[in-house]
Length: 361
Image (cartoon, rainbow, N blue to C red):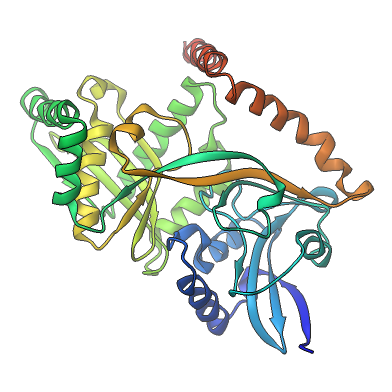
């Protein structure tokens, strides 16, 4: 009979051995090496979110799993980095059997909310309320093979994108692309554009939250090959016109914060940037670019297939779970109602954009 226990520690308490074991467990799984489920991401969130924690599952004294999370009011838990994390769950050695609510009890959580639970998280999947498509681009066979497929499936799309780049060069100035740009000025420009986009479309401005800005700045300075930020920038006439800040592992790049200068919007600089970035990423060893679960027409054009992610929450019975049910479940129900009715979803999106434009005046 093995001795099992769960210790809850701060991310800063995980040593080199824990990081090594965590990564070994992930590498042994069939899941993509998504950087959001790397211990370095949890450590970075721990530096900007004081309620971040990790449950370390042990058998006979040896770690067999890790469950990163954040703890809020009345024990309401959430996925680590909820709101900006594109892949969530627990990192468990194969064969570990555990009850989700028992895990929450050990962590002193009354609930645990997720919005991008990765596929294969059998511990939490019974508690999912919605399944979403997360488009990805497969680059394992190289960019040329991918480009051939893109030309075959969407011949006009790639041709139009290249034509817009030539037009941008003629009318604005020389076009230059930097895949991994260390310029902090370009990162600040990206944050300004993205904040304006959030406001314009009626969405919550993530960069108005200090912890998210600090998290991005921390990851931009990271040199950890298993999880670090990559800033890609498209320049025209020497100035940035589009940029993307993403998170990468050795083989997976997550499409995270893209934005562009609206003054150059007619040239579709965001599409030009993504096209250039895919080529550079493939040359840099990236095998999969995860475009994320948010709806966008361009993702349908670039993707090769979809992964599945899930939203939902584990809620313990009794009064402890009441704060979650009262605070979040009505919001989730409303979101599901709109999501399941595409015409209503499009109307809501147009309304939010209209309100955003009014606020800009």
